Every structure is written in C-alpha cells, then in structure tokens.
Image (tube, rainbow, N blue to C red; front, side, top):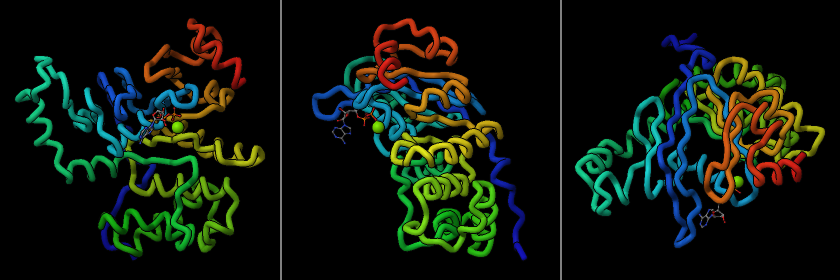
Length: 278
Ligand code: ADP
Ligand code: MG
C-alpha cells in the first residue's frame, strides 16, 4: 500500500531550457564561444558536431556539472550558470546583478534543479552492484522524494515502460548494452525530470542494439518530454528533432528544422560534417 499519492512520471511538466551567451574555457582553450539556445517545453533538440566541438561540455553546463565562465543557463526561468566575467558593465567585477545570482544559486538550488534534469551517458553509468530495479529506485529513494517501497513500485513501472519488466532482478553485467542503456533511461525518468539530456546514448552500442534504445527515446519524444540529444544518428535526428543544432569549434554554426540543417545545410562546415557521418 502506498502511503502518499504521487503523480506518474509521464505527468512531469516539460521544462524550458535557456542557454544565454555561454562561454567556457579550459585553461586558455575556448571550448564554448558564446552559445545561445532556447529549448521550449516538449521540444526535441538534436545537437550535432565533430568530436571536440563542445557538445558534452554544453550538456554538462546545462546539468550543473560544469560552470560557464560567462553567461548563464536557466531551466523554467530559474537560473543555473552564473556570469563571472564581463557582465553588463564589462569590468570583470561582478555586478550587483551577478552577486544576486550567486546568492540565489545555493547548493540546495543546484540539487533541486539537477533533480529536474535527467542525464543519460554514453556508457550507461549504472551501479554494477545494484540490480536493474535497484538502479532505478535508488535516486528517488535517496532524495527522500519517495519511500523505499514506493520507489521500487515506480521503478517496476518504469522498467515496464522501457520494455524490461522481466529484467528487474538482473545485475548490469548480465544485461546487453542496449538493455543497460534502457535501464539508465528508466533511472533518468525516476526523478520526473522536466528535461532529459542524452550524450551520445547509442555510441557505445553494437549496431543491432541501437534501434531498441532509439525506440525508447522516440516514445519519450512522443510523450512530450523536453529532450536535448547529442547523437550522430542522422536518420534518427531527421525523424525526431524539432530542431537540429550544428556545433563546431564551440559555436553554433547553424540551427533549424531537420529539413533545413540536414537536407539543405547552408554552411560548408555543416555539409562537410554531414558528408562524413551519413
Ligand atoms: P565533444 O563532446 O563535442 O566531443 P567536449 O565538450 O567533450 O566535446 O570537449 C570540447 C573540448 O574541450 C575538447 O577539446 C576537449 O579536449 C576539451 N575538454 C573537455 N573537457 C575538458 C576538461 N575537463 N579539461 C580540459 N579540457 C577539456
Ligand atoms: Mg562528447
């Protein structure tokens, strides 16, 4: 018996993500050179770009795993990154506005916001010593959002949703890569995120296992979840994306609907990239 009522994960309100003028350096290396991007609720954005173009860094900044050096990110209007250089007066000294933002960005805010953002990694990142069910149930139980029994009930439901109801008791090493990635997606869903970020979710999979993972992502898109997906699967991008963003050298070279960016790219660099991955 469940003690408290809870909403189904599918009912999580889709989030808006706004990336504003984000710059990031590693040492002297400019990795992101001023990214502006808005992802509206329920929209599916596919990010393409060559290796080293800054795709993972962008996702990590959206998820608070990295801080931008300039610019900021907000999820549902709530601030994530904080401007630390430049600012309105361009003096390099934090403005009152910046200090206000810093204050607002307490550890607690970060944790709350991170809980609203699901992240699916290329290499699954499941806990090897936990079963599929325990992997999915761990996060909502740990945050105290659900009791243990409720978390397990939710995990069972989510494993069913990704087609793995019969694998609840299996440890990751007994699952195929495609199954592990589907468990990772169920785990991301367990926190009822408003947006899910995918960093090359099928790149580590044998070709025959790619389809089952893409099918699950397609279901999420059809269900109206906000998704940001880094992938080299161009056919999939064409099918699923509302918008395709092509990143090169830390800058957005072009963006638009797949019918434009993928079928009629305007920039030489986009054409060159597509000719290599298609
Ligand atoms: P992508 O995901 O598009 O391949 P990344 O965002 O992983 O690109 O990396 C962009 C650039 O930043 C690369 O040149 C990479 O070597 C560098 N980079 C990424 N993470 C770090 C880090 N933690 N420290 C130093 N350089 C990094
Ligand atoms: Mg990457």
